Length: 324
Ligand code: PA5
Image 1 (cartoon, rainbow, N blue to C red):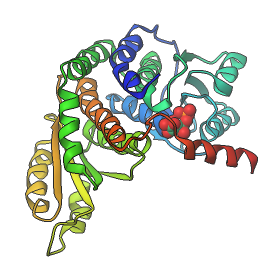
Image 2: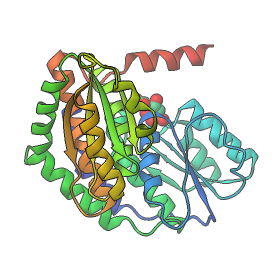
Image 3: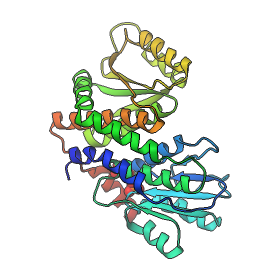
Image 4: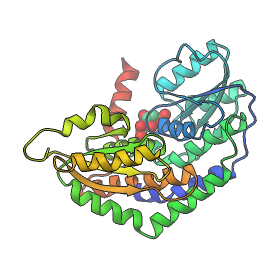
């Protein structure tokens, strides 16, 4: 399937997740673990926590404080070594495990141990399965009673993303930003919360689909350090261009900081654009930003004549690790 078709599939994935049965898990707390595209799904799920924190772990093993509750292992392939190592650590510590995966070792382990498991459809690139993976993770922590039902939020997100894709707005914004990014490295800024998760997603999509370097950062933190990086006198810092992701629900002082930060950096660095979140619910606002970044990464790839689908270096690295 082409990457364009995979991106166009996002609203359907969110609706699929809304229609899944809620797995039943009893747990006083949860931690989400995954890497890369699957970790992004963990970030999405973690944002919805309102009663208790649901942190995200990216890496081997588990943090020392993860001593009780649920470990939700999210891996599209089901074979990612860091995520399997987290599951192993969870088993050693006697923690409850739930799995969101399309296959692989994780699904086998879930079947052998009777763990709750959301089986997401196979055949996509992990990063293009974000709606399935995030939706699956959400339904699991919802089933554990750690967050309120996300069904309406997922449905609203699907509607908003669909209208941005089919109405053409996402592609139009992507074209404009791609023009301004020409020959430059994208630096994506979000406010803390959904727009920061979206900024990270933009960065990783530009890396993997367009095969270009990109960086992200979040307010208010970047106002305490990174802003100085653009403060040199003289000509604009030519190789970089900033994109600002704005969420109307950001803290009012963060919204003000976005304005002031833009004013201060604009004389020194190209501001390639500002993208505003749409929708009421957190997931709608988040995915309304994500979909423009997805469209941008595809636009950049197509303009450069690059196939956005394969990630040969990631595969090569995984192979070398297996052989080592
Ligand atoms: O986009 C990708 O292919 C990667 O970022 C993968 O998501 C990452 O390597 C982890 O693999 P998986 O999602 O199968 O656990």
